[in-house]
Length: 244
Image 1 (cartoon, helix red, strand yellow):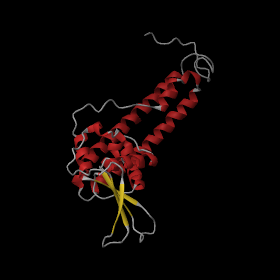
Image 2 (spheres, one colour):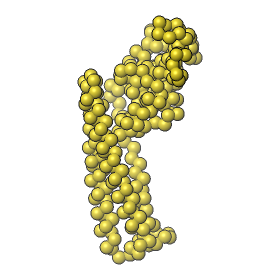
Image 3 (cartoon, rainbow, N blue to C red):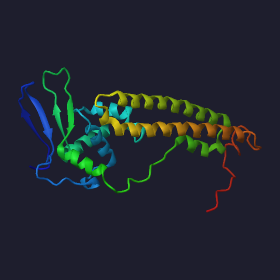
């Protein structure tokens, strides 16, 4: 079998004309690559991880699930990236898909993990290699860093808005964790609950940090040189850079 994806028609007892598509080598006599040797980026493993739970899912369903869980501790890929990763996973034989039959009111394609995909995912998840440091990009802190060019009132408003948004995210995380606790076969969701509990604690810490930042900004307003336009006004700062 070549690496080119193949499509064939199968007639089943539950609707004729369904199309089943799979990639090369679905675990039959083929060595399963370990980790990044398969050419799968972390986001691809995340998408395959969503498929590792029971039931097939469409790309749209995977996106909704990522938005309601995965983004709280990793990120939620765009729908276009999810489909790109699904195509990659199919080409590697890690996933297979089935298009709905003509009896369905709307054509959809459902994806499921293959045995080879589950083996590869398990090898990646169980790998002893360092997953790397988390990437921190905090737009609000970047704006505060440039506070010498902004009005103090603007910065306060941005931090207050961030606090309210974080509280909203915290409620969504708690809802997701509660759904996992109440789900059927709750034991299957034990590790996702651990991840969501971590995310809850991280957002609580984010609230504490943001509230402390708000106090810091209020303290700065009492310092001389803050004229409502920033420390030195809306121009080139004369604050010396830190020594190396």
